[in-house]
Length: 125
Length: 135
Image 1 (cartoon, each protein chain N blue to C red):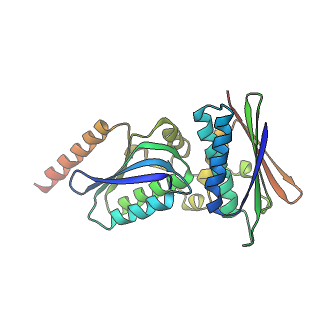
Image 2: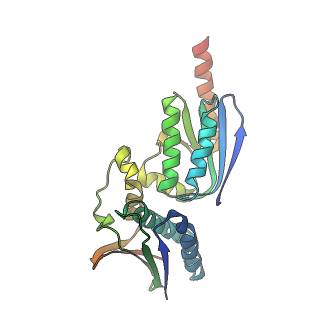
Image 3: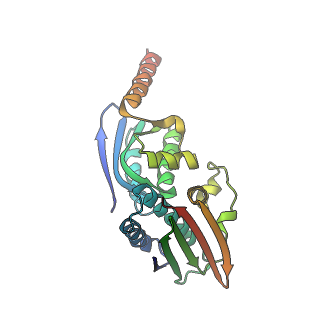
């Protein structure tokens, strides 16, 4: 299998899936299965760390798109960070993934998540 | 230089063919970024034929030919599926669920990444000529 998926926990209710390899016809089903497992937990945010992804096809886009749809359906978010240029090029051509959910690097993503946490904290006071 | 391989209409046969294609292109000194895009063009073209090209469930052969030279790579995909010209498929709304299911994203990618392309129905075969500059 040419995709490695590593699960990392960080912030509360946030799961990060660090992907390494190709996200394509062959490997998209394994990402779908991993996302299913994560969705079975109390997760509000799924982060896909794409820094190790060197190739994505429409099948891979489909897996990310389904994750975004599933998270939206439960008022959560699926965010993408660190797409390599060849992966960003595919995002730009097909426009399937939500561009507002794509972050250039971890610093940009952290800033967004901090702001989200502040909003949640304010909302519960 | 010309090389040809054949695969059956099964998604399981796709990875070895794509691996072969990548190895041939790298061996010919084609730049990594172009190799990646040609792999993507081939994956989209072939997976579309395998998923949507056949009305029956019998085994079919798909022929893949690579021709490298003159600063270009020519990729020819030949299948005996139902007549279908992916180059004539219109650019569609990526958020339409029917487009997603019908492989519309892949066809859009294929169309966007090639430099020139041609489709011909030759006898009972779809023949797709896909050209990408390699320099």
